[in-house]
Amino acid sequence: MYAFDYHRPASLAEVARLLASREDAKLLAGGQTLLPTLRQRLAQPTDLVDLAQVDELRGLRAVDDGLLVGAMTTHHTVSASPVARRVIPALAELAGGIGDPQVRNRGTLGGSIANNDPAADYPAALLALGATVRTNKRAIRADAFFTGLFETALDPGELVTAVQFTRPDRARYLKLRSQASRYATAGVFVATFGTAVRVAVTGAGACVFRWTDAERALAADFRPDVIDGLTLDPGDLNGDIHASAEYRAHLVKVLVRRAVNQC
Amino acid sequence: MPITVSLTVNGKPASREVEPRTLLVELLRDHLGLTGTHVGCDTSQCGACVIHLNGRSVKSCAVLAVQAEGASVLTIEGLATPDGTLHPMQAAFREHHGLQCGFCTPGMVMSAVDLLKQNPRPSETEVRDWLEGNLCRCTGYQNIIKAVLACAEATAPAASAG
Ligand SMILES: Cc1cc2nc3c(=O)[nH]c(=O)nc-3n(C[C@H](O)[C@H](O)[C@H](O)COP(=O)(O)OP(=O)(O)OC[C@H]3O[C@@H](n4cnc5c(N)ncnc54)[C@H](O)[C@@H]3O)c2cc1C
Ligand code: FES
Ligand code: FES
Image 1 (cartoon, each protein chain N blue to C red):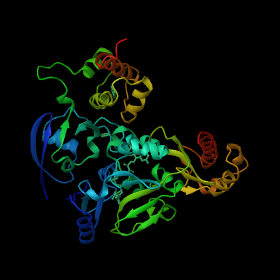
Image 2 (image 1 turned 45 degrees about the horizontal axis):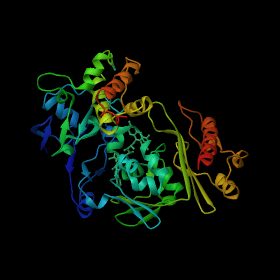
Image 3 (image 1 turned 135 degrees about the vertical axis):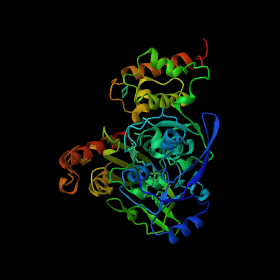
Image 4 (image 1 turned 180 degrees about the vertical axis):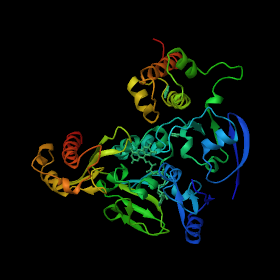
């Protein structure tokens, strides 16, 4: 690992000051992606700014029509939270299926969505639930937040402070795990709000996306077989040693049908 | 710029000057001589380095030493009693041949101890799910699962009589 300076600020204002004054400072949340990356010398930040002491980034609570979850909330906390389980059970279940228990004890919501790994789980939840990402500067709708492969709408010096989720009427997240990495070979999050249906797909493309054809068909008639005639273009999907693009296109359909069935 | 880290390791206070890039597992192994915690990968996937940080299992290769400031750490060396009596989980691994080369064992044991703290009577499926982050290249897992279930059987508070 290359050398860096370490900071443990206690407030958002101090974090912002550090990010602005250091040459190439990076935020450290749960470290479950960043530290393995640094160990392999795939990045060389001058400074790490540890968010662990920043109170403003903590907390998980029910709000009027959903949940407000602080950026530093661990996957374990979300999965075990009685409030999360009551308000949006599919979200708690998703968090409980990330990686393994040790990763869930450290990894955070903010770190996961800021990283925007194409196979990560949380991005699918944010997109399907129409969540709002709160930062130290503004509020960003999930539809505008995930912009590409490991890319988000965050500006330099901007950090995620919390995510606001709206409670759906029905929701379900299903993924096929890669046996080696535990990430999603493909994962789908299906949510309904009144007559509207949202279907988010992760693991299959370069970035999480909504399958709008399926959404329209399901909004007209919320039954698994209404998507039978639809196809995703494998040309837009990932193919790798774990699964071909054609297989992923098929898998997404199977998962959506199952998710609808279990909603 | 070196930083002083002070923490509690296996019940005893410890304080060392480390570089910020020093991993917790390096502090334990190289600075404190506690080599029972192993390093099996570069990607934080194998679980050989699992320890307890403030009572919860974590991968000590994915935590910086400076992040453990003020924390309480338990390693495999802290499980047995001072007179050498094995922890029930260690005893169960020995009894049920839950190890062959032993490389994954400290992490397996630390992870399994955390499981029984959360869930004293896990099902076989729950044990397998929990050990998702611990890889073993020798045993095929069968006897590891057996050991964890036997330990649960031996140590769980008796289900209400009747
Ligand atoms: C073995 C293993 C298995 C895993 N399996 C899965 C899986 O199945 N599904 C899954 O989704 N993930 C998986 N992960 C990733 C895990 O969920 C990580 O915890 C997560 O991707 C990053 O969160 P973190 O808190 O650890 O962030 P860190 O590693 O600390 O940071 C990640 C990145 O986000 C930035 N960042 C952190 N917090 C903020 C913030 N508040 N605002 C802006 N930027 C920020 C950092 O600067 C860094 O660039 C796995 C990881 C491991 C090691
Ligand atoms: S050494 Fe492999 S997970 Fe830590
Ligand atoms: S006993 Fe050899 S790796 Fe598990």
